[in-house]
Image (cartoon, rainbow, N blue to C red):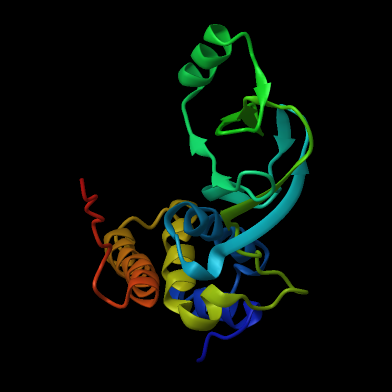
Length: 206
């Protein structure tokens, strides 16, 4: 049976498990698989762009953000902001008395984006990031992972069914197939972005 919709995915889960009494819990298996997919997959289809005006030290993070790719100031002296650690941020603020100016650094602090120096005006920023994939539901019946890589959803859901059903015998098989699917997704993204040549090292001329 094809796997193109949320309903078909749950039907296939039941078929693989040879069970017809999992209707109420199969959605949980899918949700647990989605949590893991969001942790493991980094694909160009997840890339998103958000613009905002920054005039304070702290700014809200997009609700669906998984990981920052790049953070730019696009007004004034256009430049990428450098990601630094919390320790580096505290050290810079201490040494420079939390000076103001055009932001040049950022850190993720308490669920917000903290910039340094503190903005001395309003700056336009652009954030590129990996965002969460929209979860499947009765109203959102498909997404890009299910459309292109239904095996990742199926085997990810089956893995999470095993503890519930107390069936450990097939976990290793499903886990191997699931990991193969994850690896294929990430490789496909790398190939699409870098032409199959992998990441290229930039050599600086002196």
